[in-house]
Length: 250
Image (cartoon, helix red, strand yellow):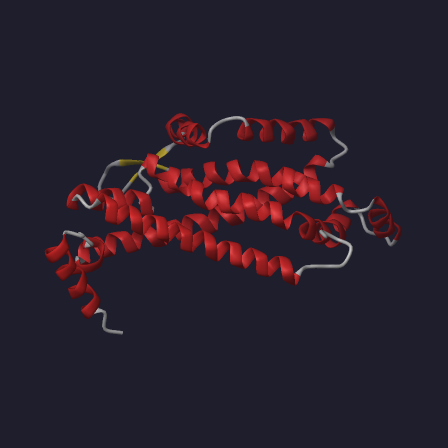
């Protein structure tokens, strides 16, 4: 599709009214913002997946018969729930990152084993995962004990009962709360800007620093995040409707 008319319209609008949409008519700014948008989507998807995995595993470990296993999971939850996510991000990137080994790249410079994007994924996934553990725990506790006993009477061990019986039923109960936490996670990905991850906010900052068009770029950011969060909410609601079962979650 030919978008040259839109680029020309944005250029004319800038010349006539001062509404400076460089990220539309300027190919360099347009490419930068597009890369930032894609990086935000990628960062969000990876963190969403890992945080759900952490939540599922953590909720299962909370039911362990080993006291220290339960205490470690509880300590993890308290640490990540009771400290600001930006402080956590700085802790991982600057404190733990400085202790990581380095390697020599092809130009002869030393580089860390994990880059800023990887630390953003680790920090944000652990942050959201701590809340997901509690969300899945509440869903698991809503599953009747008789259901678990019936599974065990059929020969299921604890892991099999959790995987095939408890977890599918718990998902139906905790999806609304999980939806809220995942929405917050997508919005929290903007914190990756603080360690120079080239996500959407970071690229937008570069654009408005070069072109002095803060209102226009911030307006685009607002609608871009409304679109991303709206898409996630729509997908989660569709998933919730598809998994609805009489007697569970309603």
